[in-house]
Amino acid sequence: MGIQASLLHHLVDEHSVSPANTEIAEAKPTVPQPGRDSGKERFAPVLSLAFAITVLLVSFLGINTLPIIGEEPRRGQVAREMYWAGDWLVPREQGQLYCTRPPLQNWLIAVIGVWRGEFDVWAVRLPSALALVFAAGICWTIAQQHIGPVAGVVAGIAYLTAGQSLTIGQLGETDSLFAAFLGSALLVWFCGGFRSNYGWRWTTAGFLAGLAALTKGLQAPVYFILSTAGFLLISRQGNRIVGKQYLASIGAMALPIALWSIPYCLTTGLQATREIWLGQVEERLATRGFLAHFFSFPVETMGAMLPWSLLFLAWTDKRFRRWATKYRSLITYLILCVTVGFVSLWVIPEAKNRYLLPLYLPAALLFSLPWQYVSETSDKAGNFSAPQPRGFVIFLRLMQALAVLGTAAAIFLCVVRFFSVSTDVFKGLQLPVLSTVIICVLAVSVVVATQLTLKNATPHNLAFSALAVGLFLGVGHRVGILPLQRQLLWSPREQIQSLAGELRAPEKLASLGPVPAAFRFHYPYFVRQLPRGTSVETLLDPVFCVAGSMYSSRARVEQKSGQQVVQFSWNGRLIVCPRLSFCWTPRRVIPLGRTPGRDPQPVVIVGEAITVEREDTTSNPACAPLFKPDQHAAHDTVP
Image (cartoon, helix red, strand yellow):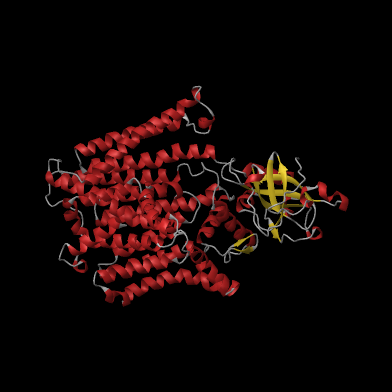
C-alpha cells in the first residue's frame, strides 16, 4: 500500500496545521451564484431517489440466480439445525459443536427462514443483501455530510460495485455482513470524534463493532481499536483514549460479545470458546508461501477494488492534493483504517483478499474525493473547463471502453446460438435477449453520461455519471455475468430431494462420519452423524450415507497414507470412500462439486447394508481389499 503511505506522509508533513485542531470542512461553494439554491433543492431528492433505486437493484437483483455454493450451505444448515434443536446459543453441525464462527449470521438466516417458512436461497442470502444496502447507505450518509453530495453518491456506488463486493457481497457468506458492521463502525466513530455532544456515535460505533465480532470473530475488535486509538494518537488526542466517551465505545463493543460468550462458555467449556474465537486465526498463522503472498497481495488488493482503485491516480495531481488538505483529518483516518487492515493481512500468507471487505467502506470515501474536487473546482470556475485529475479522466475513459466491450460481448453471446459457431465452447455461455438489451442500454448511458461529464463537469453530470457507472457495473453483473455463471455451475438440489422421496424412511437417514453441508442443506430432514466404525446392528435404517470422492481415472486418485478406503466404478467413474465395518452395496452417488466436470469431485454415496457369506465378500466393492498406494481394488461394480 505504498500509495496510502505516501498520502498519509503528505497530509501530515506538508502542512503545519495539526490534524487535532482541524474541523472537518463541509463541501460548500465559496462563491454563491443566483438561482443555484433552488436548483440544488430540486436536485437533492431526485438524486437521493436515483441512488436508492440503484442500491436496491444492485443488492437484490439476481439474488437467486446462482445455486447455493461454497460455504453457503454450511451457513444455512447451521442456522436450520439451531432452529430444529431449539438451541439458539450453541451452533452445531450434525449435532456436533461448530466452533468456526460466532452465530449472528446463523441467527439472521434462521429468523428469515422461519418467517419465510423455508430455508432456501433467499433465507441464506437476504442478510448479505440487506448488509449491502446498509453499508452503501452509511457510505452515502457519511460522505455527503463530511465531503459533499457528489461524494456521497460516488462513495455508496463505489462500495457496491467494487470487484470484490460484486462477486461475494450478495452471497450467503459472512463477509458482507461482517463488512457492513465493521466498516460502518469505523465511519460512524469518526462522526463523533470532533464534537463533545456526539459521544453517542462512539457508543453506537462500538456496538456495531461488537456485532461484527459476533459475525466473524475477533478481527473486528482488533481493527476497531487499532484504527480509532491509533488516530487519536496521531492527531495528538491520546488523552481521549482513557476518556469516558472512548471507554463507553469499548464497553458497547464488549457488551454483545459478552452476552453471548459467557453463556456459551458455561455451556460448552473454555476449550470450545477459545476455538470459536481464535481457532481460525491460529490456523492461518503460517510462514509457508510468505514471499509469494507478500508480493502478490498488494496487486490482488488493487485488482479486487477495480475499477475504483484507479482513482488513486488522482493523488498525483498537485492541485487535487492541495484542495484535499481541508479534509486532512478525515483522509488521515481513512488511510489509517485501510492500512491497519491491510498490514494485518499482508503478513499472513493464508489470508484471503475478501477479508479486506470491511475496509472497502473507508476506501469508498477516498474514491469519492476526486469526484467532489471536480465538482467544486468546476463549479467555482464558472466555465466548467477546469483541468480534471488524470486518475479521474482515466477512470471515465476506462468505463467508456468497458461499456463498449461489454456491449460487444453481450451481443456476441446473444446471437451465437443462431450460428454454426455455437459449439461446445459457447454452449454454456449464452445470454438471453432481455439481458443483452439491458446491458446495451446501460452501456449507452455510461458513454453518454461520462462524455458529458468530461466536457461539462457540473454536479448534476458528475452524480448521474456515477449512477450510470453503478448501474452498468452492478445491474450488468446481475443480468449478464450471473446467468453465465449459472449455466456453468452444478446444483445437486434435485437429486438430493428426489433421493428423499425414494427412501422408505428418509427421516432416519444417518451418515457414517460427517458429510458435506452441500448435501445436508438440500436434504429435507436432519442427517444424524454416526462414527464410521458403527456396526450394522446399531444403524437406525439399513440405508445410510458416507462422504467420498469421484475421479475420472485411477491415475488421478489422491493417495493418502494410512487411510483405509475402498473403491469401485460408478457410471464409468472411480469412486473412493472410507472402508466401513460391514458390507454394503452402493445405491446412489450424488456429486457435490460446483461444476459437473470437476475432477476429483466430492460426492455423497448412499448405500445399503447387506448380509453376505464370507466366500462372496470379494464380489462386493464395499468388502474389497483395503486401498494402498501399490494396490487397487480388483473388483468393480457398474450398477
